Amino acid sequence: MAPAISKCVESQFTFRLVRQVYRLLLFLVTAASVSFALQLLALNGGTLTSQATDSSAASVSNSSDATTTRAVTVAASDKSGQLVNVKDYGATGDGVTNDTAAFSKALASLATAAGGRCLVPKGTYLISATTNPAITSHVSSNVHLMGEGRGASVLKIAGMPAGNFLFCSGDNWSVEDLTIDMQDYFIERGGFAAIVAAGNNWRITKCALSKIGRAGINVKAGANGYIDGNLITRTTASPLTNAAILGVVDGEGHLPINMHIIDNVCVNSMIYFNGKDSVIARNRVSGSRFGSNVCVGVYSDNVSVINNTCFGGRGRDSTKCFVSGFELWAPNSVVANNESYDNDGPGITMGGNNCIVIGNRCWNNARLTGVVGGSGIVARAHPRLPNAASGSIFIANSCFDTRPRGAMTQAYGYNEVGMGLRDIKQFGNDYNRNRVGPAKVQAQGEYAEHLQVSTGIKNRLTGLADDPDLPDTTRRAARQYLAR
Image (cartoon, one colour):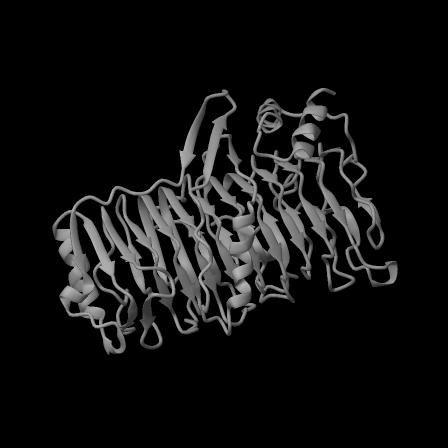
């Protein structure tokens, strides 16, 4: 068993690490995306009263250090094959009759037919809670469970869950345009979720997972999965480990690969991702009370965290950590154009080595004054991982406190915590306007601009400098650094 790395990631997963560098280009947050996020205000006690706008198919791309580039899009799945309607199998959707058997029979018929669409008309479908999973037939290869829109087609748990609500596995499956209402039931033992996602080439899109209780979506290994445009809510945040979206190892020790967590809104919960060669982009995450709003686990590798907004992390969790905006431990990653504000802990905690941290904004964090390391960006070391954030480069980040001097709580713009950090590069950052000072660094950390970067980082910076979808200021800063 691998040792714990920090209290916030203690007792988590042990994985095999395969390193491969790539870069992902993403469109900036559009006005429609902002409108989508602001629909949070329409939530009342965790109940959805207004639908958010649909997320458009976001175009992203990735490139290796060898300069080859291929496009990756949130494309529609192939939905050819048989078409069934759950009402043809006896479902009523009246919110009173138990419709579990009808869903199980409809999904089983599609599994027998090697795939197709299972339509869920408007209505509220009561699902039994006494089995694991609640809907006993799986969403399997080439099966697409499709509603008529979140808030319209609602699947509602009938009592305390005995396990997962819906299990999905195989290849080329999807769950779309549905609401799953978990009624705030919290299973004390971790590992249960509204949706378990396994397999390859799958998609969970434009769904609402409301009152999730323990966890929303549990991703088990597999490759090329998309979780996009979903609204995932928990009525009351918990200091115990729970997640809107959780990436975990499967029974054979495999991590999720090439996952795309894009354009989701998560309320009173967190994104806790363990995986590699993946992207977390344009999500809006708020109100976590465990660890951070977005955490990328210590055994992850090469994760792009871009254009996300995290705020409202509150209190100390069950491991005694102050909740931060981001906590990122994956090496060889790109952390770009994120915003983090109004968290009780730091804005961004960086623990991964050889990372590019560029164009991020962190303000008014460390709300609980006196927090050790309570700053905009914190580069972390650890006794068991002394080179954690070493070899990383910080470019054009802005970390500040907007309040009057006496009311400021964000101690430093940038802070190095723990012993053993080295070869950290800084260029074009604005760490002014904080309670104590701009930066607190170790002597050997060298608050420096002149250190050389690795070939891998240089190639990724070259890609960022040429990326038309990044802000001019970010691209210009990357070019300026490369020209030194």
